[in-house]
Image (cartoon, rainbow, N blue to C red; front, side, top):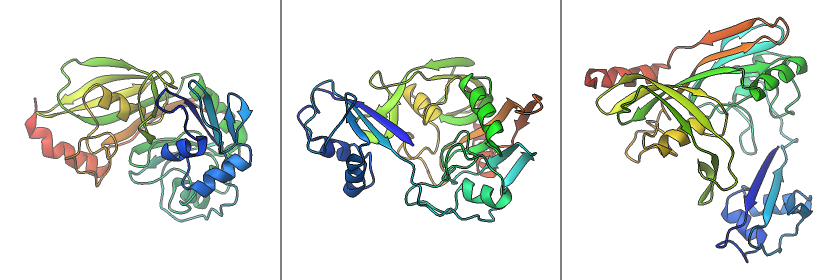
Length: 305
């Protein structure tokens, strides 16, 4: 399930809560939102609210969006790139363009559909829609993901993520030339008040977000960077590099308008390291950049800075 929290600003005060939430695109339809409200998933300052409630300045709105439980998720032969597998964990190299798990309106061609075909035993901790899924990467981000095959493994991997002991390195191609070799972006991230489907750097309803990076290569108009996450916020790398004026190339949401977004953002989860839940052996995996990413590098490599 997903929990959305909103603190009412002066501009929003006085509006009906259902109209405010629809304008923030928290539900796919008015009927869906009405169902959430009727089932008691909407609260104001901790109390269940009705659809006609008029919000007040500084009200804390909480909407819990439950997982859909009536989906029929089919196993599909998707020829997944499975990098490692044993009785407890799977490491898979996800291609760009693939959604990690089903959601309302998206029932096929997700990583979960492929996992159900490739593996009959997956952890059930995250519910029927997200079996085995411990963490996610965006649809148009490629790279390594760890998947739990049983609840013991799921609990161990989740704790490692919570304790920030999982090694995660991403390669990103960003616009512009970053002159310093190393950097740290420490800027809180929350939902964009103007677009509830987007995230932004903000102090309102935000969570701590820290991205460390080093420059791998400089080109005439681009920089290839390696990013290490201290936190795992939604769209973190994409939002942080947009914030410092170097958006990820090809990013359809946070990138530049003239970008070709047919491939998606040039962002790849390249390195993944964690402790095996059963043997406690440290496992480390490194994946090649996707072909489209390598083609882009070939196109610009003669433009070395």
